Amino acid sequence: MLRHPRVAAFLRWLPFIIIAANLFLVFAGVVNVAQAAVLIAVLEACLLGVVVAEFAAIRIAFRKARARGANRVQAAMASLDACLPPSVAFLVKQELLVTLAFPRLFRRGSPEAGATAVPSSGPTGAISAGMLAVTVPGCVLSLLFVGGPDWLRWVLFGVSLYFAFYAVGLWALYDSNGHLVGPRTLRVRHGATTDVAFPLDEAASARVSPEAHRGGPVSVDGGTLTVTMFGRTNVDVEFASPVPAVFFDRDEAAVTRVRFFADSPERAVAAIEERLSRTSR
Image (cartoon, rainbow, N blue to C red; front, side):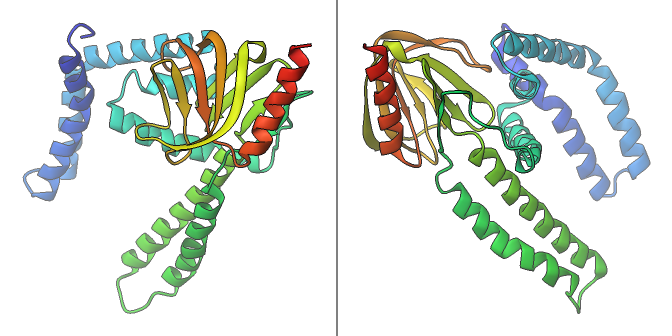
């Protein structure tokens, strides 16, 4: 399966295709719910070999991420990429990361000794506040909804409540995962799945450099690690020689430059330059 990427991709989608096909048959009136459940169970049992292989891939990916320094949650997120189609894995990870961020509202961690926290939430707070401004009244108005069936009222309430919780979780996720400038290392982070440490004694310069980027939030191209917030970066750190960038969910890469976003790029650059002046003595 690993030798044929297209076959592997098809087999990852196959369980979802089976479920979607059975749902279509139910809504079309071809089979009832009980028959569809039995059919799904039989077909999924026929894919037992695929399921076993996927569980093995999850275990391997989990152990590899743990060996790279990931905690259990980060390792679990990395293992999802090994068993789910990319688009499904992305959606599942986003939901889980936002949900698991709720405890951070009540358990705020402090930066390590001697480290300077560099917030990098960007417009996430404003986006979350805007979502709450719509969804909280939506929860109330949906319960007062009259003139329609009861099920519609509860559907509207459920959708509004879901997005209200999502807004709070989104704010908690990015507000508590800023970058860290330590005495000897620069930790560049994004959400809960990216946390890359670089030795500051290898850094040559740091400057404010606002730029827009296309592509994913975390990418490596031409020896440059780019960690964006809504497609933007504003801090550029250059290293005198290639340094390793160790990820939880991908292969290690050698980089000579790091670009990331900070809410206050001037403060981030000042903190890095202060550490550079100390290490150069």
